[in-house]
Amino acid sequence: MLYPFAKMGGTASNSDAVARRPLNAENIMYLMFFLLITTFYSGSANSFELYKTFQTPDVFLAEMFDNKVPAPVVLNLDAKAQQEISTVFNRPFPSQRVRYWKDANKTVWVFDDIGKEGYVPTTSGFSVSNGAIKTARVLIYRESRGEQVAEPSFLKQLEGAKASGRELSNKVDNITGATLSVQMMERMARTAITLDALSRK
Image 1 (cartoon, rainbow, N blue to C red):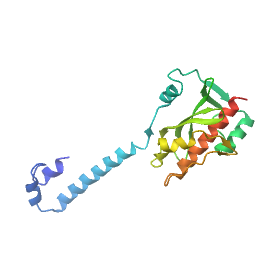
Image 2: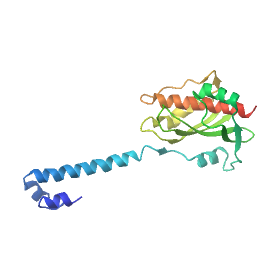
Image 3: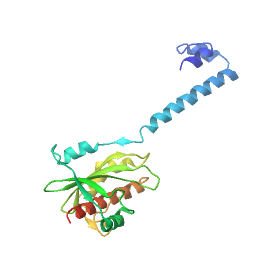
Image 4: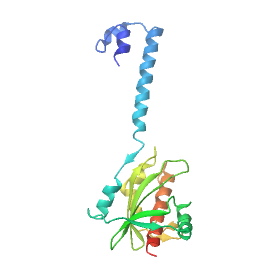
């Protein structure tokens, strides 16, 4: 990073000498190159922040079951179950075999959804008890905007929600700039309720 300064006849600490040098075409070229490299690395750093892990699935499961996570159970979705799921998930569920965890009081589900076609899936976790959302968490958010849906104040709106047709019984406030993410979380919560109901048939 000190190379442009050396070429201009000074050092990084000799700002007066650098300031007295006239800006010719060569010096301007070096400065532009320096700014380009700085911008590139700044942009690369920001790109790594797109994937935000708020909680890993393993930690979420441990919390839901007080560190005594039961063995997973598999729910097989036949054609009828897929049809039922697709009405709330807005498309066929991506897997015909869904892994979940349960105890006497609740079922726990970890799965992905997308805010919009072409987006990268976000991973969320839900616990369902007596046909209602008990806990909702965003585990890994993979978009550049809309991560406000991971905030406890937003997720609390989903707690206690039950099925109301294809929607939820709870009114969930929208977040400016994150409408698709809000809709995604509502859809995932409603899907978790449906999966819970199917697991009890």
